[in-house]
Image (cartoon, rainbow, N blue to C red; front, side, top):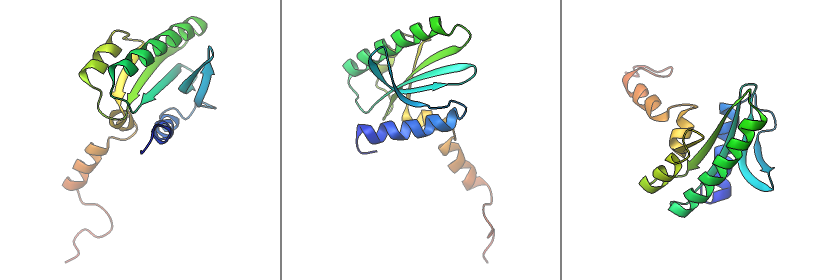
Length: 141
């Protein structure tokens, strides 16, 4: 994930797998502002903002925008749960977590690894592989 566009593509790939019933999911314009991801299912709407930045100011701007759009969508769609996701390439900093916490429960902050783990917990998978036989060759001797 070299640059921010590649990172956004990886986040979108995970989101499409998490919410496969969300037709036409991906980047959209809402209120004349680009959103990195919009995924609407029968019961939920997920709005994504993703960043490679570790700066507090980036979290401040993105979380405020996320909160605003989540609030607007909650009014437009009272029958659906609306959740804003602020996804960071690396583990969020303490400052970023504090900033996102100001907008809870509308905005949820998570790292890419934790977001991806919602699909498959890779660390749990690797740990399980070490403790159980795997594949067609169990004892090559």
